[in-house]
Image (cartoon, rainbow over all chains, first blue to last red; front, side, top):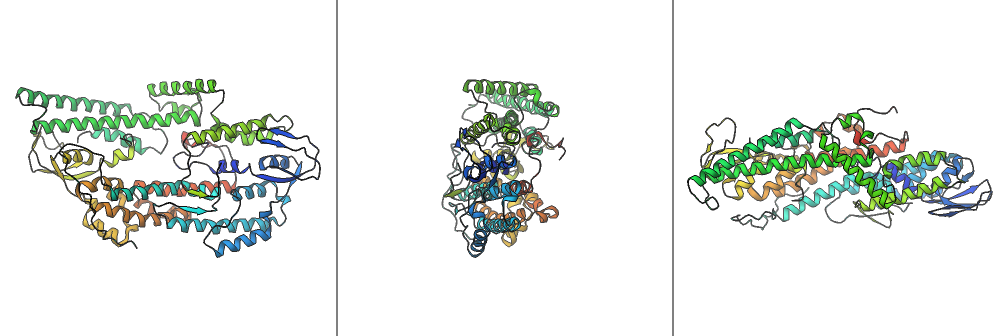
Length: 208
Length: 197
Length: 184
């Protein structure tokens, strides 16, 4: 519905999801002395060299691009944690708890703060593996779709967004078909209209 | 076949790429209108015939009645096709205001050529209504364009110490969220433990 | 009527159904070849659904099952729903079917969700294996509704991959069409 995304296809583009992810708080270590910054979203700083501070990711990246700080790798992005999560993802049908914006945050950090990430290649491949395993899980879950309520815990923003258009349409279709089966055309009220019997013939098609 | 022209008009609309505009098909549009007139004349003729035979037009269900019925239904069908054609195009045209720009001249020439004169008029009035509204509210709601620009221009060229651009970014963000909510944004899936906003 | 302006609904109602006239009708030429301008009671023809339905409601005509829901199609769907070419049978298979079911044959109402459930899985699989999609003839078998589902899955996935790969951020608004692609 917004931005460059096609409103008929999905509500948000990936870029818009990334935009929202930039609100997540990140720890930075500034290398300059600077008064506090007063924004509508809040006040950050004052900044002192070598003293860690919490700022939104967009601010962290902007400072980083100007060489004014280093970004501390979030705890969940450590090799140990990611290895553990990957194993858990493989062993279980459920989604492991990860930050809601883990895909976007990791990509932004890989792109703009690579020298702040120890074991960059390892971390990147772990994140990609986790994402692949989870996407596969999403597909398996989609297969089991019915018109009833769908509840999946711990899906991330990007994972939801990728299937949003498809899942929305599919649910709509399931809902429509199931309802039509139960209530034949009742919105037409013409005189002399033959009474439509509502008893349903017994279902003789077996689902596979 | 009856009301076939209306179908052709709608088909013309459907054949275009989704969400994109085809040139306004004035020729076919007029043919549908002509066909409506034709159906109306034939409907009238049948009713008149019934009146001349002094049968009760309201109650009688003779062959003339059913003939008139078919012409009546064809008229309604053609009307629906005409309405749908205009309505669906109008929706695309409205979107131009959000996605391209509020001035007719901002639209690329190849788009302008596809609009009928009354559609151009519609776009202009729709845009100026939006502009008046935004002026009254005191906020530029047209953040759709600015969103992608903000990120790039704002962050790359802004100076922190002045703060202005950072504030702008936040304003835009807030307004954009309002815009999403106002447009009935909803999650297609129920997500537990993950507040989106 | 909520979907008065809906293109797909209008097109779905243009699908033809076989009818038998129960009343004589004067002053109409149902197809261009018959010149007499008169329909006899008991004569048969095919009418678009929007007209057939109204005549059926007024007992001026009776509707029978059109070819796209005949026994042969049903057997094929029961045998292997995913492989049936529904588009050539009727691009609005589901919409048309659900409109038709209460009027002539309610078993159609059972056929539709059955077919959709099976084909849905196939769409899900094929849409996400993009390399496969390029050469496949699978998309040509899909109805309008299924195609939009298939395209929704594909385009979201493609958009995500594009985002991940990075690249130019400022794009021409999709609403303007693809005539003048900016140099990438």
